Amino acid sequence: QRAGVSAMTVSNVINGRDGKVSEATVARVRAAIEELGYIPNAQARSLAGAESRVLALVYQAVPQRAALAAPYESLFVGACEKAARAGGYVLMLCGTSDAQEMVSQLRAWRVDGAIVMATTRIRPVDFMERAGVPSVFIDVYGDGLAGSSVNIDDRQGARLAGEQMARAGHRCALFVGPSPSGSAVVRERLEGFRAGFGQGDGAVGTVRFGMADVTFEDGVAVGVRLANQLRESGGRQVPTAVFASGDILAIGVIAGLRKGGVRVPQEMSVVGFDGIEAATYLDPPLTTIAQPVEEKARRAVAQLVSQLRGEGGVEDIVLPVSWREGGTLGPARVD
Image (cartoon, rainbow, N blue to C red; front, side, top):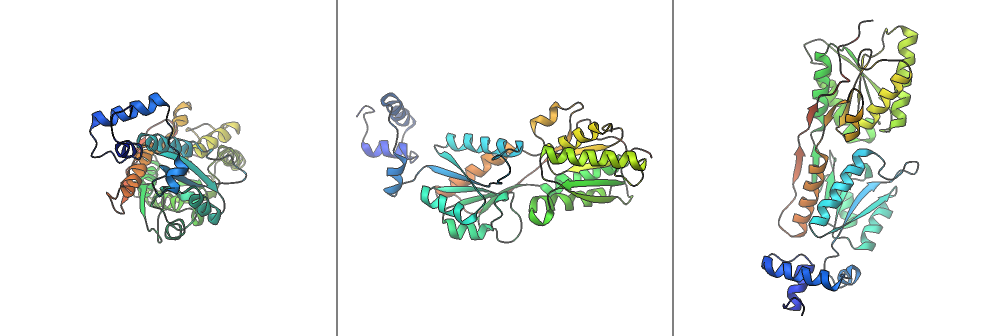
């Protein structure tokens, strides 16, 4: 009554079905809603068979780590929430280490759709069958991809890092990250880095692998270990460069190297991957491969909403990455 329109029109605006409603009417309805302090009952709408207007962001919870503690993860979640809110949806975080519990939560909350991060370690086709909601998968590769996905060009980004290191004269590099067998993203980056580092200016490069979680603490441990090896051996057979599978890991490596008295990049070069803001605070700033995290989040939400509206089918989006020059990649040291 306050807006001077029918109950059906108000319902259409509240539930996002305002494509055929004039902008003036939509504005009038929203103004009346705000003035009256009306809050739609999401549970009642869901029980009535309407949209819940809730999207789930599904991630793998790790018991020994704070939820979404990695800078990349928190930035991605924040960007997803912003995009969902702009589209009239609420973003619900669903973190669990048990796949069945994850699916049960989604069904219990009657979410409209889900954005699933690769760290869930559940095959997309299995997730789609069990959850029964439209889904968009983030950083997922390989077989079993049944829904839409939004990825970055992990392989090309790592290849670029390898090529740049080889051009700087490095012939032995250490790749640090989680096990490639448990992460398709790490596998893509490792293979890309090996391909790029093995080309360079024609010289054959050697890539070693070091196991580490993408955390600052693991990075420090790697850096300290490298510093000790460098001092004990006089530099012989010790890598001259490190490529970390994430920026926060690279930042930790630099801290560990400096703790051990190793200068970066004069004695050891370090390159990261992600392009997080914290990387720019180092002195010198971290050289890294930057990925468009906010655009990735926007595209994921847009793709999911498009599916919910019946406007789009399955689509696999691959976003480009870019080389961001800092000051942590220098010429290879001469032992």
